[in-house]
Amino acid sequence: MPNELIRCPWANADPLSRRYHDTEWGVPCHDERRLFKMLILEGKQAGLSWYGILKKMDTLRAAFDDFDPHKLAAYDDAKINELLQNPGVLRNRLKVNAAFTNAKAYFRLCEAHGSLDSYIWAYTGGNPVVGNWETQEQMPATTPLSDEISRNLKQLGFKFVGSTIIYSYLQAVGVVNDHLITCSFARGPRDVS
Image (tube, rainbow, N blue to C red; front, side, top):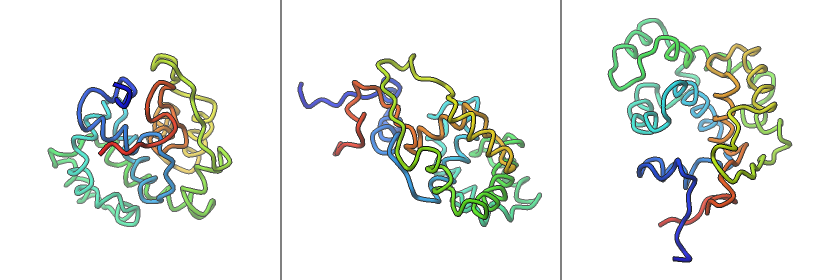
């Protein structure tokens, strides 16, 4: 069928992954709240599957006050302990604490760079880096770009921002477009309705 959509292989596993792949992954994002949310979620995903995050998205959004950095920065020990008791949250103390720590670091970043949007897109001159991969196996886990951003975010006090996490983040928010060259979405989202 000539009009059949071809997706990156990882997106064919389930409907949640397909929807995420088709509408968000690799799409340039300039929404400050989403950029912050995805940074938090990519850190939570470390060592786990993204599908697990997608399944828990509504629960995570509710538990973490819709990833509002103002609210996250105000979390106290009682709120953190409440989150650690919530079965719908990834109950890793380091990851829960990182949301609080990263919200505070976010404000330091904004003070120095204006916004997360201006900070992250300055690395590429405002243009997405387009991978020209034929297979998933060719796609790197890190790049010099993710190494540099990771190092700089750590200096600002962010946690769970290693180079692999940051590369995944860059893909998620479209700073890097790593749709395979055979993917119908290689040059942007399509109307899949």
